Image (cartoon, rainbow, N blue to C red; front, top):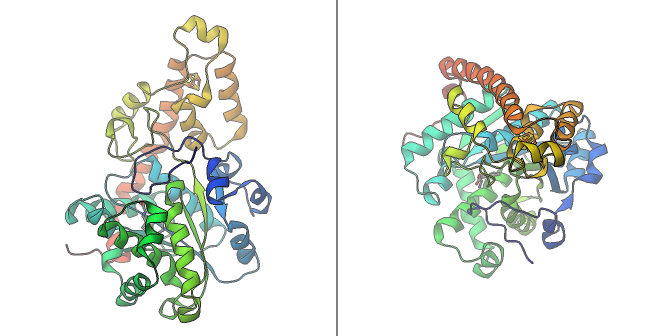
Length: 368
Ligand code: TRP
Ligand code: SF4
């Protein structure tokens, strides 16, 4: 069976391993011992695959010029899915990498059909969360696509010349002008940092969700074609699995009742965790006898992604669950408590950052 990677779709990808053979994404395994310091996303295989990430790490280690560029679409309030990228950025920043983040407001307007006012507000919210989560404002840059320079826009125009419709359709399937624009714009997001106006060539890493790989493939092809003319070179990338919503599907703002938003009131978060899909058995009796199934459980996923950075503590939850020692009610109560500690602390920082006016100082916010 072939899997389809649709960057504009809403699907969870069940079999991430298929992406290795089908698209040539490399498994993350061999890179693990090259990481200068460990992070649980990697050894838990939440970040499961990459393209040339090993080469990028090598360039970083040798002190060559490197940068990280990623982005997100401001089509809803920021949730735990977005926080995964922010967490990855914080880690990459701790390794010494320069970080640039694009707010894909042009894409959200054209493809997700949000109003300009909405995407600007969601964008501002996202940037505030990124800073509140600990990205260093002195070492991170943000921009809105629609407020970027003529040089960047010129790149989008130039890219359009060397891509055919047949190629685009081979990568994305049928697509309308808005998506063609969005794809070329994303290629410009990733590659413009290599232009002279932006300090010249540097090796770019793009950390993203697995659904974004089609854009990376396109961007790598485009880079090859502009190597002579503009000195562009292929970016590297790594991919994470999506955190699932509490109903078991990909977490998304289009299903707000199953997503955990970073600004949800504590009461709402507790309620959401309590109704989450678990890997529990039909009755308490059966669960004591057979144990639960953490692999299926969205609460276990919360522990694994965000609640327990310590492997020892995570293993304990796993064993308590599979051994039938703990039942889902108690397990959820503990998860909700841990999550609330993290979120309430974060919300406090969020308010500080929002009130400080730093976002407006750092970023040019489009007027409309
Ligand atoms: N398409 C991305 C998303 O859906 C957003 C995005 C725009 C992006 N430009 C980018 C991501 C460049 C990584 C790199 O979220
Ligand atoms: Fe999930 Fe916890 Fe229930 Fe196990 S005990 S299925 S980890 S909620």
